Length: 319
Image (cartoon, rainbow, N blue to C red; front, side, top):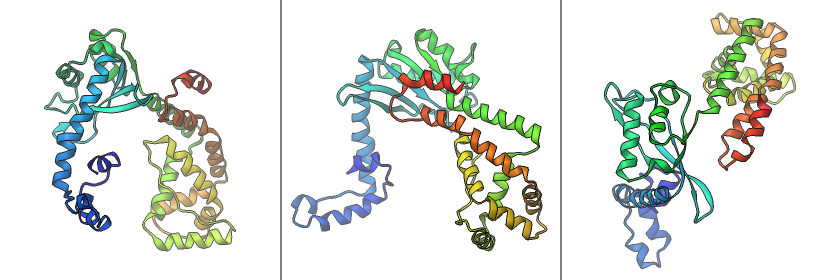
């Protein structure tokens, strides 16, 4: 039961409720009547028994077999910075490639985010479990200088331990950056900023049931189905394709709304000016056509199943 909660990321508070229900569900079982399973005991079982068991299993595997490491620093602003260390292995028993958590690699102090401090912590974990660097065939990180800089980085330090270890920066970040830069150039040329209008449209309707109801009436007038406006998250260019598609679905109603009503707010005036320009719809259609160039390859790179055999062809097609 404790493993079940941990595996599916179920809050440990649920254990207290489950503790009362098991004896009722299995009222003919003597074992179930003695079932005792609250949050404190569950936490102790996960941290004291289950976690060490799987950690030991993982360590024994990577001591004898090739593995890859992956790490990325947390972006919280606490005193302690977390750098979760994950290993990627081929589990020969179930014939599957799996990711396993190895250590949190927490660092503190004014140098907590430096390459030297983070590497020392990673190296300390491997030495503690007597894991040889020679078995580390790959290292996955994002593209910052701390990770992959040519002079003073985690990569240069790992190369001193194992020169054959292959460092893989995050291609998803690169795709995101390419899309952002391309969009900025498009904006400089056309004076149309896709992210600005997506954000304005969402937040204009976000907290107002009255505005949403009026938009629903305009959608009915335009003979289209009302659909919820989607929020654009500017760190995820996978998301913007969905937002553009939704805005185009609702475009006749949105245009009718902003050209037929009047408000004194700055955001409304901005949107009214945008929807008065017929090219704005054309720009949306352009983005709808071009964004799959970035999102299809991005989704491919985020697949859970191993796809290294197809990566070269996919990236070549993208380029």
